[in-house]
Length: 412
Image (cartoon, rainbow, N blue to C red):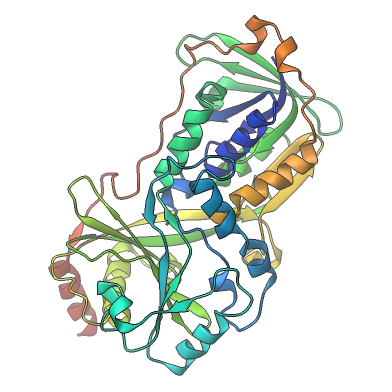
């Protein structure tokens, strides 16, 4: 089978790129070894960032410049105004909120947040605040950054191109390399039937997040071109008020909270930000005890008495930077006919796809001239499912009383 592009990785980056390619008439195929979005996409909070967190020092940084146009682009796709048509994607919230703790550093951070953004904070009157932030002593603002449900994004993009997405474990993939770093052929074996499928791609794109490291080794490339920055995220469930937003303290995002509902009708908070970075060095119980105290500090009057707590770890796979710092934008590395891609942030996925398309150029494989036998992928090939959300997976949930007792023992 002649292909314009073979994509490895069925997260947001791979599926978005696949959609762009197929709409432009390219012959493209995507391979996923696990479930769609497993890893970074499904674990993300779903915020379409507009650069706020990169302006807290009071200036427009390169990171903010790269990402500031993304909320408008996503908003048009979610409204069906531009492609891909994402009207089927479920919104967790149409906007976020921004609030500060009562400190001088936090007030300065709110000033910095207004610098040069397409989406700038709009200060709310007391009666416009969400219930959860009614007692905050400082400014509460609305930020027009939408919050999407990642599993819904994955399902929507997959539904448009299901015939071009295959589930293939790494052990069933054989790679033949040519001269000068060129990928010559890739042979797949159907894990169910053993049937073989031989692919001859003009370009190969690795968009598998953390899996890019192993894929690069299989393609005889070094894995030193990427880095991994871990997070230890907190999830809280119970009779909680919905809340989506950032608590700013000085130059840092102290906590970022997004909300959803589980199958039992409980509100679920995903808690990231600085607490998730600090939590990398903590065990689960220590992190959860600290997170409980942190949430009570940044959300005055919040009732967590009946909440349950858990955590999960996720790695942010990125193109390597000096010192392992956060990249300023999406990462792209071209070697022969192989491209390794890292979106860095969910919001930058469309930008990454455009960068890949610029390097690939126009399709050269004429779909209409391909024989039916060559063009069709047998229905017997398995297709991947969407990965479950972090709080759906089996976890040990701790009660609020257990965390309070742990805090007391540590204080003693």
